[in-house]
Image (cartoon, each protein chain N blue to C red):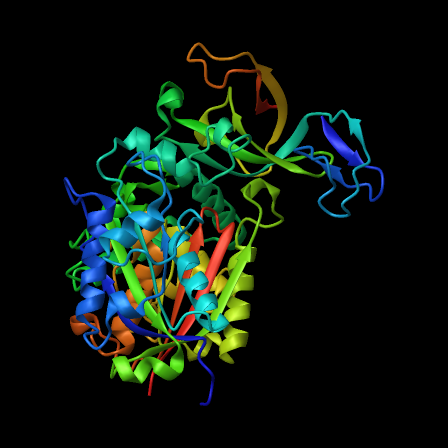
Length: 391
Length: 111
């Protein structure tokens, strides 16, 4: 299948996700960088990596902005150009996109892309407040809408229009917990049952505690190269063959439809078109399950099933390991964790492991084509990337 | 209040200096009726500190009679009795004793 890659992934790294007490974001990022360097000994990072793009959502958590040069320093890569990208929860997929475009421009042969977030040291009240900044302030936040509340609105609309049930949403959490038990870097590695989800306390009805992803610390990164150089530095390159990026209104209320995310649909269409592929071609995917309903909506936006059938897809086990299209083998945001800025490239990391046969007990057999879906806020920013195992 | 675009007749709320559809900067201020129906809603149990005392409370997206939609807290109603399609009416309140929000805030109540 001749298809010119946009860029190649020659290495990737990811920190432990969880409550990493006493560690700064810059420190956690250096863990991910260290792994990426170790996986790629042929590369001389200081000599070869020419630019760094890093996603981080919040300056308030550590009262620290200006992430670019800070993590570049802790990666040992000064004085290369550093850029922090921000798109709420899609900040590091934005970094990935910038890195891809940089490689395609021909200006750099190798770039590092990644993301980081340090959140667990703050109170629930503070985190709720900072996360809500991903939504519209004048109308949504001031009406008392929280971030889970945004997806509560989406959930009720989806339940009303398609009959999606709370049990189907709970099935997403159960699946992702089961997958996370096979991921040593996941934050939450314990089984959860439908009843546990259903009985957990309401956060933004119909979303309950176990419908919501975790507050986490973590970092992830990848090293991208021009495709023709990849083989010199790794025997297992992963090629990026599709990239889609689209925007939507910041306010959910400004849209015509609450049961699907127009920007995600557009980003997916563009990525599939670029890759010359269809949803059926995808072997494994990491999608943005910030809340269980978000994964159900993602299935539909990505064309994995018809509109309204997302609940059935997870219920029938299609998206479980062993099913036809495993989704979130890492455990997803729900169980692996959601250090906001790190999530986009952490999804890439999982697909990288899957396509290079390194996913150990959660390996999808013969995985050749992978997809990542990373949305920011209520998908006001959406990015979809498609990957192919390098031959 | 909203803006009614002189060029393409779109009603823009929240008001903007330039029409999002046609880009025209010429619009008239119009007064909306403040009535609408609930399109979707959620019940907030975990709220930002300043609003914790109000929980559980309902936030809905309301389709205003004139067409556009706005989010808003739905007050003076039993949260579990809110339904999609419910008719509501806008109302206003002065700043709460917490000082947030600081100026008159709109909300909805059953019509």
